[in-house]
Length: 101
Image (cartoon, rainbow, N blue to C red; front, side, top):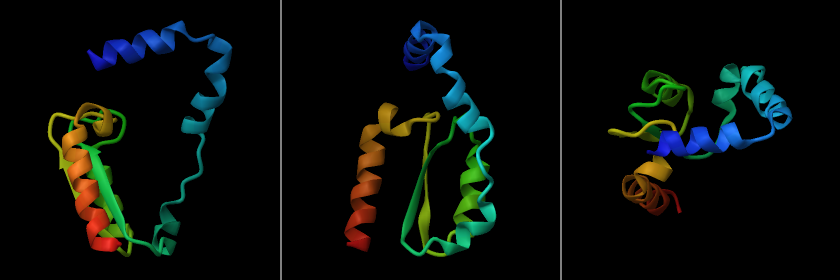
């Protein structure tokens, strides 16, 4: 259901407005080598069914971040688990914030 809603929204857009967001995603800088500079606590929340960015990428990222507090794998969620599985995401965020605040 969510996919069809998003597809309809994107199809309804003026095509001329899609170029900049597409180029931003396709040609963004690779800053992987700078992950060690992140000096604050991080929690990664990732949908296990994400087709855009595989869960393995989230796991790999967690090892590059000096103060990563973990990876929350959201079963059944795709690229926007905050929209499809808010209970899991909110619980994870609340726990993380209690730890770091």
